[in-house]
Each structure stands twice: as C-alpha cells, then as structure tokens.
Image 1 (cartoon, one colour):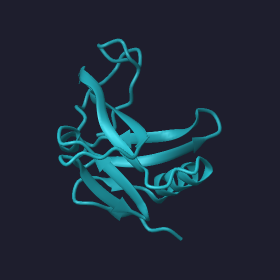
Image 2 (cartoon, rainbow, N blue to C red):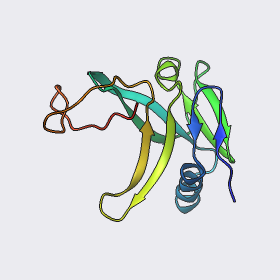
Image 3 (cartoon, rainbow, N blue to C red):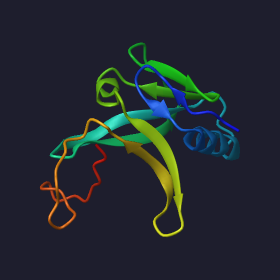
Length: 125
C-alpha cells in the first residue's frame, strides 16, 4: 500500500502519484514530470491551479519527489501551494481528474454555489 507523502510545501496523495505514473506510462513520456501552476485567481476562493505533463524545466523551478513521481512548480506558484493537497478523484457521478485542495483558500459562503467572479468553485478550508 502506498503511503501519503508530505513535502515541505504540499501533499501528494498516493492516488495522484499513481495516476501520474499511469498516464506517463500510457503515453510513453519518459523524463516528464507533473507541473502544477497557478492558472488564474483573484476571486474570494483564492487561486485556480493548472496541471500539465512537462519535460521543460527551468533553473527557477522547484522539484519534489512523491511516490516515484516528480512534481515541478515555478517560483511564483510554489507560494500558493503551501499547505495544499494534490489528489486524484475518481467519482462515478462527477468523473475523474486531479484536484488541488487549498487549505489557504478564504472561508466564505455561497448563496448559489458560485463565486462572485462567476465561476463555480469549492473552497476547502
């Protein structure tokens, strides 16, 4: 059984690590890593994260290893990931995919389940 690894910055669940390994193997992407980055932000939920498979690493990138998977984060995004958990969700009703649960997201309530920015989000704080 895989054990959850907590880096100094964020946590990667065993399910997320295994999903990355599976995708890299299926696509035969040797030498690639999971890049996690801030894709947008500014609403009351905090920031939105993006993810990609990447083999173009910069000197300013920070790299982490979790359960045999390399995770790369740029110098700006790393501060937004502090305390977050990267997970892989496989839900029969909502589908499957990666999720970043940001423990630093602002606490707030939604009347209609959406943000003031017009996007739907879920803040886990």
